[in-house]
Amino acid sequence: MKFPTLTQQLSLLRSGKTSLAEVLDETYRRIEEENPRLNAFITVAPRSEIQPAKDSPLCGLPIAVKDLYDVAGMPATSGAKFFANYIPNQDAAIISKLKDAGAYIIGKTNTHEVALGVTTNNPHYGACRNPWDITRTPGGSSGGSAAAVAAGMAAAALGTDTGGSIRIPASLCGVVGFKPTYGRVSLRGILPLSWNLDHAGPLARSVEDAALLLNLISGYDEADPASQPCAGEDFSARLKESIHGKKIALATGRFIEEATDADVAESIRAASRVFAAQGATVTEINADFLREAALANSLMTQADGAAFHRERMKEHLDWFGADVRQRLQTGANFTSSEYALARRTQSEMKRRMEILFQTYDALILPSTPIAAPLLEGENAIERARLLTRFTAPFNLTGLPALSLPCGFTHENLPIGLQIVTRAWDEAGALNFGWAFEMALQP
Image 1: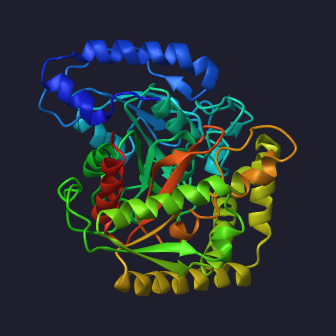
Image 2 (image 1 turned 180 degrees about the vertical axis):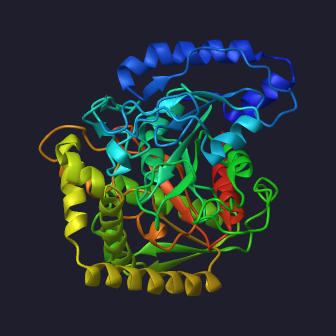
Image 3 (image 1 turned 60 degrees about the horizontal axis):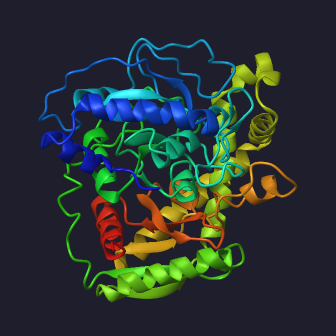
């Protein structure tokens, strides 16, 4: 599925080769045609005319937003019965930034209920489906955002990521998804799942688009307790640097190999050769230590989710869908000792990754060990459990992690490559991603 990237649309608008009205006409046409099939949107904004300055960063281009974000005047359901009638009167912090940059918020996308799951098979608003094969999941919990971008229903989208919820759907839908460093992007005005693990970030059709969006949404927010003071940075500036001489660690070992399908494994190996051909040094490392990080992230996600939803669980536990209810109850039953041990694992893993990145510039591994599993069927739930395996460790450590397409399975389903860099080195991850994209250009 090839649609113009955000950057390409901006170029066409600024050169006068297309108009904003034409772009919006085509986008709404795509939504009308594709959304009944894919159920990517919970709410579509009514068509309105905006006149952003032609030199604004986004020039009025349509951006989709996961339904966890507050957008003034639009429903913010979070995919849950509890918030079905909630209409915020002000924007989330980064929605304000996007609007100031000239974005047209075209709608709110489907999500796994309260973001606690990775299939976007929502019991209240219906299952979102994968544009490559509608019998399969788009991933989650930002499944609607990824499906909307992949199917041409938005130039780009926003998602959230607590255990992989941007990178998983990006991988399964064949788009780019980026989770920045914890604290880089404000979470104010986004429904929490875990105060300790939540991240916000973009989904797009190219690495260049992801860099552009990150430029617009990042920055310190003193009203968000998770936000970290950090130097302002142009993430597009280093995009096109040579990666010659850079050092890449290729994750191997039992934790990687025992779960990864053959098509995915071969695509990641092929990706490592693409980097080596550009002069990077690729070294295999045993990544079995990531297993412990993934388990700790899962425990904390469920426990933190149960803490945030504790009053709703007391009042109307039956309003949660069966899978989310089970995860919340599991989270509520963890002991304080178990949670303390998970936090200790978090500290240890952060230090271990700091040491790793003293030697290497990037770590590469699959975004997901499998391509998109079936939405329904005997093995659907079991297969879906694999999806957070390679993404969750980098929520625990808070590191920037990029997913981008790197091939297809024999069933023509997208495969995602994950690139992880040291804390606050988003520009480095994007640089590696851009180099890989350019190497695959015909």
